[in-house]
Image (tube, rainbow, N blue to C red; front, side):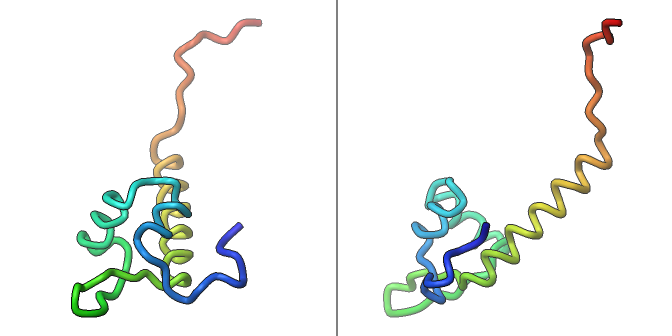
Amino acid sequence: MGLPSDSPRFLTLADVAEVLNTSSAQVYALVRRGELPAIKIGGRGQWRVEGSRLEEYIQQQYRAAAQYVAEHPFVDSEPEVR
């Protein structure tokens, strides 16, 4: 899916939160932990995330999820009915 082609180059944390369907606080935590690259601009130090970096982060999360699934196979606790 990705970001629309007419999206601005840089997104606010609120914009990122909307894309990820999470809170701005959660996005801020991702940035502060270094999981989501961002830049700090202006006198008040507002954070901005480049759209391409957000897409890279999303792809990285898909890879991490796939690895988790591969390492932790789902085991159905219900016996198979025949």
